[in-house]
Length: 129
Image 1 (cartoon, rainbow, N blue to C red):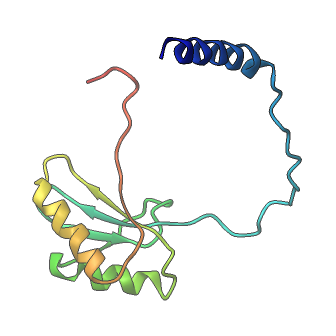
Image 2: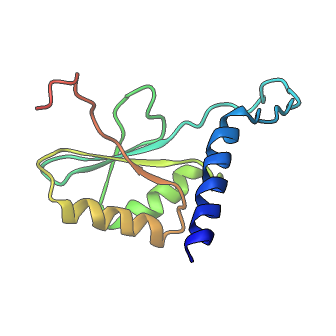
Image 3: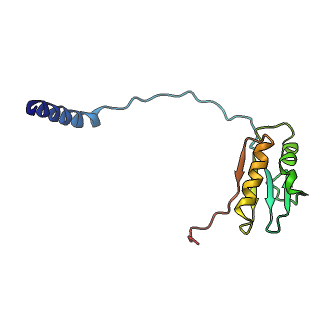
């Protein structure tokens, strides 16, 4: 058993010394131009602290959206997608809104067949508060 351990230690040292000397292979990948696909414009669902729900079809403009009943979130978002199943839906909820309300909204969207659902958050400036 002892000679076997000695052989293994010698092999281990050999591999440890030679491993850094082996150069990794470099692969030259083909390059292509930028895709002509326009960036995704998410549909934004805003849930305010008084449980008022708004749907904004163009979240980038920040313009006011149409108020919708909470029970119609899935159907309204699906209609706003207009057949584009890959268009993301983002939920922006006030921090005073119950977690359960946000989960119910996400569940309604998933049941309506919307695949890409995300949550919008506000980043802090690193203050940790």
